[in-house]
Length: 314
Length: 309
Image (cartoon, rainbow over all chains, first blue to last red; front, side, top):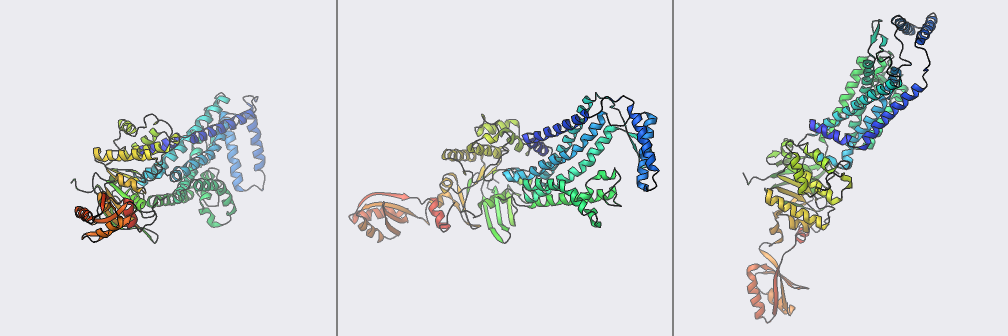
């Protein structure tokens, strides 16, 4: 099994295509970070943030006095005030204007990782059918299930590899741009009990990465299913990318229907539970995970059944 | 044990939808032979080979390789098999060497030395580190043979191995297959549409037509006698007189005039008597030779003269 994964990795990393993708990702991080750094106010004195935050806090307080404010918004603003109080009290500055602002901004590029991984995954299986190499691959003492699994694992490893690159490059470039000032800045947030807590910034970043990684896994699984069903890279890549972008639009359109919460794309973005605004009233993290797990199992079952049963003709 | 067939098919049937592609085919391939598969297009040669190597499922019946059932014990059965199914499609973006590494990793126990050995066997030492996309068709074919031999298989299956090879390449492959069966005791199953090639290459031939096995014989038996009777070509003048004389002889099955002389179908033992009779009938005999019917003639006869392609 390890050898099969080594093989898949060899076929992946000994191709220019793969390294062009890595290059594009690095370029995107560099570009985004440098642009953001360029427009930063670099002349602000060290203590300027305290003034800023005090001002913000006053604004929040006036808004709290608005009688038309509903309970949810009210709670949200109170949290913001609590965070600002905590910052002032413990002298912890916000991320904006530090290296972490750029790094957290780069985390948006996870979508690029999903895109690249889906392209590679769509081609990994279907490409072998297109070029005919599948024949020589399947006449070895390795079951089709193992071959499918090794491809799947190598795709996930590729996704993780790109995440690590994203992390390293964005930390390095932003660190260098800001001379690694405020490296140890903690993330101040409010936990479930309404308590203000400090968290490690890097750990939080990885949490964001991995929540987005869930959608990468689902899209890769989908690309694999289409690959093994239609044996066409174009179909697999095209359809997966289409749903990657159109998925959110589709669920917007059908939001008013109750059943829409069972649609894959309504659940794929788990960060909706971090911001506290789920797609439909009453949806919970557990609900979404269950729905995703069901889709995940169905997709894998279809790829497995189709790939292991079907004749290799042509 | 040595007589145990290396491959055995028992009542193998393949249906796709309603069409029956292979209909109840049974045969054994003995060890150490070059076994040929003949048949017109669509006869089911490639389908049979694909079922042997597990690329296609078997609707009914059983195929076993070295006693292991291809369906239930696929990994053990295929371990002894090296194959090229149609053109050897390799990973073009990898070097020839990395292609071999790729396949070597899939079977335990293949050393770097073995890879180098196979590379020199197919004479690719100078180009093995080049990308496959830079290879000529002949070189790709040789790399295909290399990947098939990597794990010292006891059975080599080649589907249309001469496709796209020039005459020199075909000859090289033929000599090489002979060498393998003689020195390493490898059994080879080969399908081809080039009948003359099969004639030179194979020890035994199975003829498939419309999914059915219609004949299975040693190659000598195919091109040799027909129920003991053979075709002889007799040059004798005057031809009409000679023909009349021959037709009266007992044991002559058929005789007719041909441009080169007289075609006479009879048993070998009858020849001296026929010549004596011709001499007695005042005809002049210039020569007698046996004419082997080519595989192609026999083949067309058996498959009803359908186009071979």
